[in-house]
Amino acid sequence: MDTSAFVKLSYLVAAALFILGLKNMAHPRTAVRGNMLGAAGMFLAVIVTLMTLEQFGFIAVAALVGAVIGLVLAQRIPMTEMPQLVALCNGFGGIASTLVAGAEFLRMEAETPDVLIATAVSAVIGTVTFWGSFVAFGKLQGLKAFSKNWAFPGQQAINALLLLTLIVLTAWMVSQQTVAALIAIVIVASILGFLLVTPIGGADMPVVIALLNSYSGLAAAATGFVIDNNVLIIAGSLVGASGVILTQIMCKAMNRSLTNVLFGGIDASSVAGDADEIYATVRSTSPDDVAMILENAQRVVIVPGYGMAVAQAQHAVREMADLLGKNGTDVVYAIHPVAGRMPGHMNVLLAEADVPYDKLKEMDEINPTMVTADVAIVIGANDVVNPVARTDPKSPIAGMPIIDVDKARTVIVIKRSLSPGFAGIPNPLFAAENSLMLFGDGKQALLEIVAALKEA
Image 1 (spheres, rainbow, N blue to C red):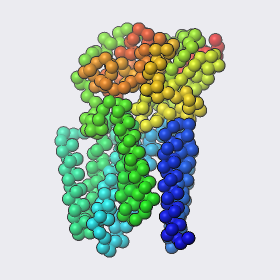
Image 2 (cartoon, rainbow, N blue to C red):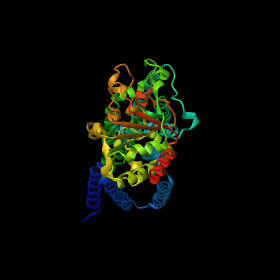
Image 3 (cartoon, helix red, strand yellow):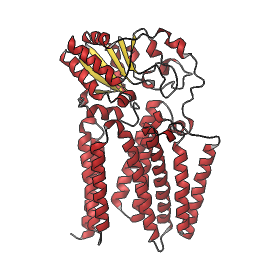
């Protein structure tokens, strides 16, 4: 078999591994296997590509350095900070596409317009992805410079002008094939990437991360056209398509359009109802009282939210669930698609705490059975359990699918305070007749409940 045929066959095998990996990652039980299949496909693609090069010493060294950095990050980054790592990986993928396409452009002598357009597209999308991901990382990490949703009047008009400028610069680069045009494209795309994400709130990050993931794939696919690499085109297309699908799923779970997330945000200024009036009947409880309620419960539904991630309470949650399970209580977890700061955030945290996959129930599966729950325990969630989404058509979250915890016989809400979620609106669930508030740090509160259960 000649070298060309071997490379093409290897790329075909790698592409098949990518597809099988994506299919397996569709379910938590097979997600690890899917990840390994995808990694194996990429490893094969990289090795075969290196074999086609006459000199690859520098590339091999760079690959080794990257592998070491990736291994260290994978070992040291806690699960609670996984959204930040995903944001950075998206950004690095984007800037890598820009650099590869740019390097290829520098050594071009005379290329066809389609290749030049692909180069410009790679530079635009890759650079936008890098800076957008950098801003997303800052918001998720809680960096002071990104703590507020920074926006100014006419920002969308400026973004539109920047996009038009990029189109003009692309035409200039295609017609003149000048490096100055490529540099200008990177500069303008950097500004656009920064401005696109700065106004978006932290709670919309699941959608933003999914979209940036799609961008990184599209940038890679465009770069594949530039360097005439089929496996890069396939891999980039798969990432781009899956990212778009995931973005649509996230938007549906929030009952909002992608346009609204990117350009509208949530406006709580028109919300009716005074928080003091709504919370006038809030009742607080203690860990000992919660333990007594749980001892007599036959079915318990745990609803994790971002507060659980902040408190790093996933292990305490599992310990409490294990104790209840030994007592004969059926314990399951209700997972909202946009709970947390990235798609699947709660799944990742609970999997890290060795919670059985079959105990994780998606919103559509758990809601019809909430009326049979003796106790629903909400840990750091807010908007995703706010019943006004069903009852108040004027609410900013009206129509947003929520987990119907208010239908449980008793609701225990573990939260530091009565502060609102991202939507900025009060949650009547906290003051409902069947609700009790356990104020405090999520992890500490759960550990105290565990201690009380052990003493019983």
